[in-house]
Image 1: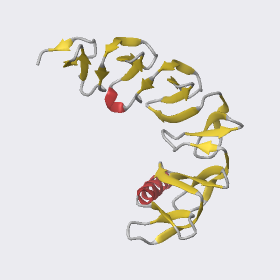
Image 2: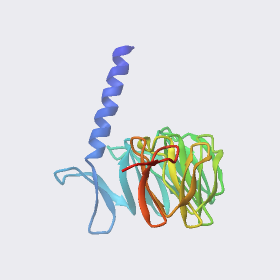
Image 3: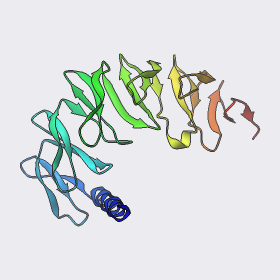
Image 4: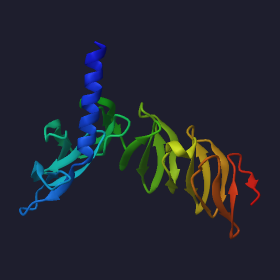
Length: 219
């Protein structure tokens, strides 16, 4: 059993590496497919739209419908959706009848397509950015809105952002945590993401560095 599991893991890793080397190309008839790093056609140009591989799958579109293929060109998730996003953290956003949901790599519905947002983005550190009526917020992997859709701009909760992300509201910037709590006031003219416990901000025309408590760090 352990040997079979190891073989499966190695096979998946090889497929992922191979997928990363496949790049979209456009044929003379304007259709799209994929070539490898030396220009050899690997996946025939038969799609209206194609996107880069992510987590071993690539989103493709034909006749206004979207699904996913693997590095061999097999349509592993049927082209039945109005729109899709790339896979991230094992999930991809899909739109049906104007509403968003999420599927896993088997094509099974994980979050029912009942989310009434204009756009639902990929997951990052357990949260996905959503957009509606010119505002942004975040949902978790159950589809629950954990950060209200009220901000003019938000950055993703990337691993290096250390649990805080930049938000913009009313022309000013600040920081929230993954629960949506505004932990550093939204008062800055500009702000960069946290890295190694520090972030750069600008206030009253002056740029300086703060820690995760919002305290200024002497230069």
